[in-house]
Image (cartoon, rainbow, N blue to C red; front, side):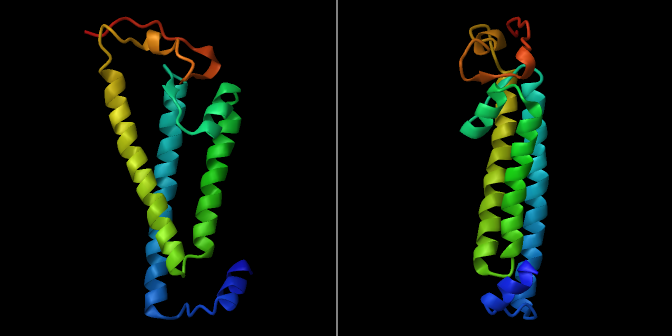
Length: 153
């Protein structure tokens, strides 16, 4: 119903090959966005339930500080659902495709950053330990789990 309204309101020709190709690209990008977002949630969950992490998103950091894992999952799933829904509604328009490419690019960059962060966490040396990092106000962890850390060789 909403899609028909939008198509009639903006006079979209969804039968044209250009619009159909755009729709296919946007749908593939939406799948990529969903998969990368799920990966982000899983990695976030893993770090928060093991030795902790820093969260750049202030909304997510606030939720994590409340020690409510369900609210964090709800926030992340809700925000990505809103993003995907909006993109799907306008998938036949150029702006929808641009939005899909921007969202996918952001999540690709985030995935690369997670890989670097994981390597960095493994590279702690004798002067910086996980235990020292956990003393920081910015360090977040679910259920006050504290890992007794020893310096890595």
